[in-house]
Image (cartoon, rainbow, N blue to C red; front, side):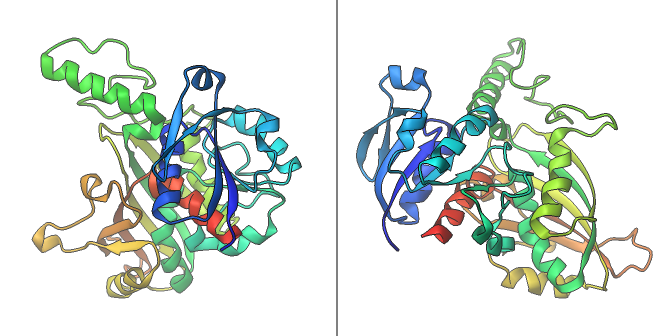
Length: 338
């Protein structure tokens, strides 16, 4: 692979830091690294560590993209919309983790295990899907290929760090308060105290009572799998877990698919690890799936509510939303560009 000049927009954040680690772990051919962040980070003299060296953080501004081949975006929507088109105008290809471009018709939305072929149609920007969408679709896709997916019913159990560093620090603060018998007080960025609690809201509500996070599973899943009529019903819940999202998924198909067939398909699927031994209490859990890149799948079983009993399955999956749900997925896309 030819070496590339790589910029990371939002290099000091949780996802940006993870992108740096993934580039290093996967031996990505980086000729020079350009870490970009806000004026506050630059004024503070921030640096990032890459391949044993300290690299100064530069101000995220249009001219910073001169000479850059690939940009990995780990910034908020507004920053992405303002700066990534400037990077494209200067000749870079951008892989963006924000929500800003995901549903734009001319921007590929890519999970490499599912639709890597869409990368070739980019016009300078390739979108990284929502973390929960990625984690759910990696195991759903091989089942769809075998039996024809028609409907998904999904409940997600999303870790505090899915809200970025503020979410992670807030959960840690609340846990300390609870352990000390102190009042937690106001909780930000969450609507309520998260420690010892669950919050069935991630994002704002639409006119029919679904949150923005819940609609991402439908809208992004349809685009990624090229299934514009796919029926999806999703409930997203924030849980007091540090890292790694979990999902309960019921998938309905056009054709019968047995549990044994599904297990065999998943065992052969890229990006999936089957951990499914109920008798030994073995199934995916956040603690075991953090800090790695596979989506673990278990609790495979028939959907007892299915009319025919054979064309609907239920399973449980977990994956690290900072790695496979964000940084690793972006680096995987970038690997196709080189």
